[in-house]
Image 1 (tube, rainbow, N blue to C red):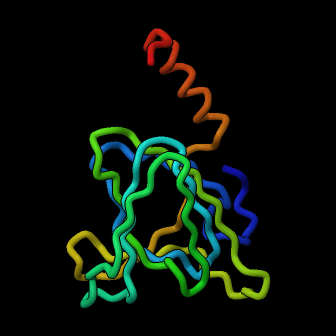
Image 2: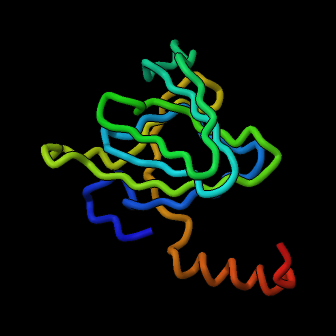
Image 3: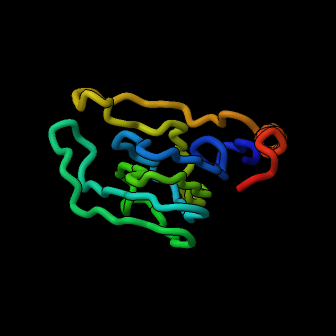
Length: 148
C-alpha cells in the first residue's frame, strides 16, 4: 500500500495474507525500521543472529496473535523467518522506513533460498494496489453470498 518513495525497501505499508502453512524464507530487512501488527489469526517468527547459509538455527521463536505488535530496527530483529503454522488464515499489516541518517538505501530483501545453500535477493513489490485488492475482495464477498 502506498507509493514507493525510496525511503523504505519497497512499499512503505504492506498488507500480507498468510494462508495456512505458508512461510517466508529466512530473510533480512535491509537495515530498515519496521512495525508489524497481526490483524487476524496467528503468525510465528523465528529470529536469527546471523544471515549465513552455514548458520540457520534460530535463537528464539515467538507466536504472535491478533492485535500483537512486533518491530525491527537496524541491528535488531532484522533476520527472521515468518510462518503461519495454523490451519486458519493470518493477516498482518506492516510499515517500513529507513532511518533519517541512512542515505545508502538497499532496495532489496536478501534471503536464503529454500534449499538453504544460497543467498539471493528480491525486490519487494506489491502484488496489487489497495484499490484493486478492495474491489477483488468485494467481488469475492458478493459471489460468496456475504457469508462469513
